[in-house]
Amino acid sequence: MKNCTNHKINISPLISIGMPVYNGEQFIEESLNSILNQSFTNFELIISDNNSTDKTKYICEKYASKDARITYVRQEKNIGAARNFIYVFNNRKQAEYFIWAACDDSWSENWLELLISNFEDNDCGLFGRYIEGQSQSARCPESFLKYQFIKYFIAKDVSGKCYYSYALFKTDVLIKSDMELMNISIGADQIYLLNLLQFGNLRFIDGCVFKYRVHDGSEASRQSKNYGTIKRVLVSHFPMNYYVGAIRAVPGKFKLLILFLIPVKYFYEQFPKWVMVGKKLFQYLTVR
Image (tube, rainbow, N blue to C red; front, side):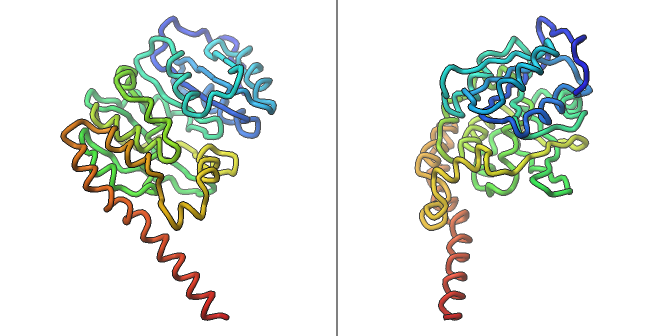
């Protein structure tokens, strides 16, 4: 980690970064280093520790003591992942832009600089390329223009559209959004982004890289385990409250369209899983 003791937090930083964390000791130092080593430095970092039971507290306190841009808060009890995401946003300073950061991901050094320098008036959120897991190739999510709710809703989960959750946003857009949609058990990121599309474009730019770490302790892995692998394969890719949330997320005239598209979305996501199960069952029966 660079010696950051000379950094002084501005009264009104241009970017607020919110990092919710729970038991992040394994990867959080790498994530913090990638933030503190950004070429763009006019930011604050709010870390909300969701009552971790590992060494997260001591790591965060160490970093906060060395860099005045960091505010570290430890929750007295676990308030849940969604509430922790909302907490870091509600406890920001009056910055013009906001971005969520995961405790197990990392950014290229020019991440903030490129995003903020390319932000346009009609943008809601701006994102770069992403590297998933151990892959060496950087991919890009598809851009979605304002009001392209249908295009976003139908697009597959594996298309990379979820990564816009970690885009750079205009703060006033997030204030107007429905953050309670984050409480959906599976697919909350997609539903929340669907809601944001009424305020502007979700757009991709080239030149900076977001590294997404895949591991068993991630929030996505925990949600999948809680919902159940067999249930997801045989019954539904998404729980019912995902589809209810999708209808709630869009403005009035789009609600009926989303309602009609729910069966399409369901079979579009679910049919490949049924085919996979059928093939495995056929192989099992023929081998025996």
